[in-house]
Length: 345
Ligand SMILES: O=C(O)CCC(=O)C(=O)O
Ligand SMILES: [Fe+2]
Image (cartoon, rainbow, N blue to C red; front, top):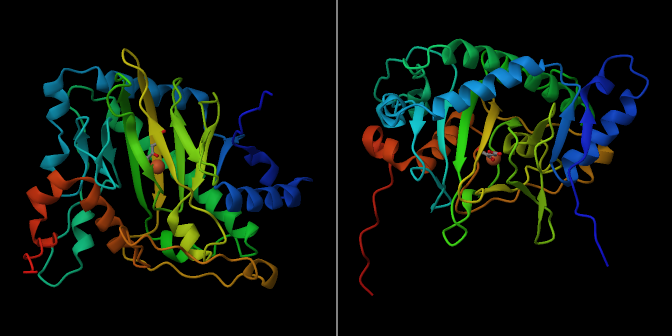
């Protein structure tokens, strides 16, 4: 008997416009999708296809540069966790990922940090952009602005779907959200090696806006021990709920587990992942949900290997230190846990 593979739902952002006849139905659908699978394709998002094609083609050109040009902006040079990483330098739950990538964030000056200041202040600072591809800087900064606008729109509709005012989260992003944009290339590998492009994980922020080029590999936990394939669909983004929304909704919404499987040897896969987080100085509120939703909260399951904090900066710094042990050792050794002394039996 043949079985159709499950797939992610497709939502159209234009149905959420004020006065749209399907608005109430669209909000119901969003609430149900964001609670069950936590992932969907988004169409009608308003970001021009030209801009999307432009960022993908510049990303491809960056990864095709000679290695020295890429290493000129190595992340190891940045205490703020910005810049390029070769494949194999990043870890998910202690296991090596296989992707090369450049991380960009809010373009700010680094802070003068006094002793006793919160350690997350070290995350604030400038990006590294490649001299060998000067067009990349304006394109990345423009794209971050565009997807931040889209992300805020998504936060507003998630808030309404939870029976809140659209700007209920305004106080924790209005003074400057914390964005992370990654351009990523997954090189193909023989299946005899590990197939971990990026290991199973949840994303940390409000929402993730993922742009995929033409090769698939993204898989979402189906909650039954299997995976739902989420292949690229031109003109759409894959949107997923981050841990911040799960925490704020006391587990009503689901930040679902996902991973990327390495493409076969000889090929590669390109993606551009945007993570919209709250202001680093802020604390995540727990929403006061309407009674019919409050009756269905699941609470937040804490992973003892990876505890979640309500303080945003602390959470972000923790995850950056874990993902990039080389940067942590080079710049933040004082923040790392000392190995425990052996205890005699
Ligand atoms: O590259 C992708 O498709 C997804 C990447 C991802 O899940 C992540 O970087 O958090
Ligand atoms: Fe992710």
